[in-house]
Each structure stands twice: as structure tokens, then as C-alpha cells.
Length: 435
Ligand code: SF4
Ligand code: SF4
Image (cartoon, rainbow, N blue to C red; front, side, top):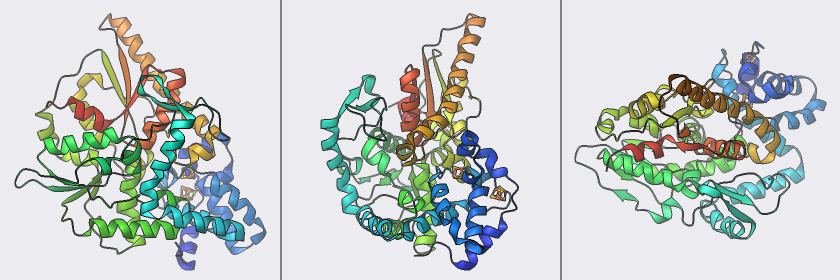
């Protein structure tokens, strides 16, 4: 499947006016100042290759990899250039250029778009986990016993759950009469790794009296495939999820992973039927909870004034989905003065899914800026409390709304500032709601 036909590609390339605004928000450009890696450079090179000089095509391979698919470029572009399509297109081109790559990608794509293979993959990985990894103290995750080429021993990784959320929990939860029926799209990271957040989501929805459906046959949303240019694989997964959710009669479909939400709501209409069960009713869990905040706040527990919290904006949630105020509203309602913004809360953490594996050093370099902002936030609170001789802070927590960011921030913070914890907003809210 061609992601962009000739005409659409031309239009997209020509709509760039070379203003450079995208560079101001590109985490990679901020680090290496390499114009080619930013959105403007990628577009210029692609245009050059398409219109004039095919010999530069090798350079496209390099710039295609230099990207987190954070889409910060797209969210600030005054021309609305669809980088969310151009970047996968670049990667699709790269994958199709050489026969060996084409063959590898076709095998990979077949396997990774098979819902049954995806369901079983964690079982296989768990065997390696038992052999090759050791636990990090305080349930912060695991680390390798021996370094691998792109994964150093010091890196903190998430634990693969013994059983996935979907396998180990009910698929239907009754609600109160007249309350909405909510479909829960769990997402791979909450299904296989951060299972506690999926449990917390159900707890909150049940407190609100919602009936909840968790279709057993749901699979990966396909965003990793889509962003890496494996469009047929993404299409197959999209069609599978569309079929699975089609007859569930959901008023809303929610997910605690903003990357899944972006895929389901923005890209599924391109990959499957324009009107599908996700159209117009898919939102991230926090936007949904913010809609029902008054009911939730009635059940609020108190928060200790020893504990301090701040919020990290996930790129896909803040930039692509424009959800910035809802998590803050909820956090302020629940935490009051114990919530304090950090500077540049929407600076990318450097995660970017597979980017943090294939380009770990760059991912760390980008993340170190984030860590600096977090450390400054903590220093500021400590200094203020000391000056006022008020309650001595005992804990500092960065709260976020994306499991990918959570994993990256945990790794970034654990090695140098293990006393700063990382949590998903949903976990915090579930804990703060009285039983
Ligand atoms: S912000 Fe948009 S229009 Fe401006 S250079 Fe970047 S891609 Fe082109
Ligand atoms: S998606 Fe992110 S990393 Fe890639 S070019 Fe855009 S801003 Fe830069």
C-alpha cells in the first residue's frame, strides 16, 4: 500500500516554506545541529531526490533513521506539513530499495503483524528475561546481567509481566444503569509490561460506574509498524482491531497510551474504513477522566504535604493530540499545592519507542536535558522549603501519561537520582481515590 500517491507527496513537499520552525522543537536537531536530520532537511532532501537527483537517495536512508517520530515538528509547523505521513513514507522507501532489506522487512512485517505472534512474543521474551536479567532494587525494573550491543548493563528495563493484562483479567465489567459503556484499548506496554496501570484504569472506571469492555482479541495498534514504514503490517493490525471493536457498542474507546490513541483516531481512517468503531469516540484515559472529574473528586483521598509531584508532557499527547490541560486539571484537583510544574515540561524525554534501542546514546543525550529540568524542579522545592522552614520534603515524583515515557524516565532517573520516582497519572489517581 502506498502511503502517499504522487500528487499528495508533491503537495506535501511543496507546502514546506522552509521557515525552520520545526527545528526549534526537534529534539535531535537540538543536540546535533545537523540540518539534514530535522524536518526541513528531510523534506528538502526528499524533494531533491524526487525531482532532480536520485544519486542522493543513500543520504535519505541516514536521515530516515535520525528521528524519534515524536512529531514535535508537525505540531509547530505553520503549514501543517504532514510529517506524520512523510516520515513513514521515507522509511517505507528505504525498506523497499534493496532486495535484501525488502526480503527481511517482508518476513519481519509478516511476523509482526500476526496478532497471535504478538500475543505470544512476551512468553518467549520472558524466558530470556529469566536467564539474562536481574532485578533492580525497589521494583524499578530489571537490567541485563551482560551487556548487549545496543543495551548496556546499566540500563533499567521494564519487567515483562508473568501474564498479560488481557489474559489474566475479565473482559466485561458491569456498570450502573445509564452510565456510558467504555471500550478499553489496553496497548502493548500496559498489556505486557506496566500491567498495574491497566488494572488502575479499570478501578477508576468502575468507581465512576462505567461498564467496561476489554475485547480479548485486541492486538497491537500498529503504530510501531506504521512509523517504521511497514504500512501493510500496520494496515493488517488496524483492520483486525477495527473488526474486534466493531460490534461492542462502545460509547467511548479509551487508552492510557497516547501513541495508541493517535494511531487509532488519526491513522486508522487512512488504513481501513474511514468510519470505523474508533472514529469520533477514541480518547486518552485522562481526557476521559477529566470529563468526569467532579464524580471522581468526590472520592478523593488526602495527599501528604511531604510529597511533591510534577508532570511530564508526552510528545504524542501534548503535540499531536493537543492534550495539555486535562492531566494538569486532574493533578491539581488531587494534589493541590503539592503539584508544581517543572520548566519545559514538554521537552521530549528521548524515548521514541525503538529509537531508544537502536540509538540509545542519542536517546540518553536528549533525555539528559529532561533530567536536568527534573533535578532543577526538585532543587527549587528543597530550597523553598528550607527558606520557609516548612515541612521537609520526603518524596519527589514525576508523573506522566505515557507508558513509553515512563520507561524512559525511569531509566534516566534511576542511575543518578533514584530517589525521584516515576508514575503514570492513572496509577496515582487510582491510589488517591478512596475505596
Ligand atoms: S515548520 Fe513546516 S513549513 Fe516550516 S520548515 Fe518545518 S516543515 Fe517546512
Ligand atoms: S519527528 Fe521529532 S525527531 Fe523526527 S524530525 Fe520531527 S521533531 Fe525531529
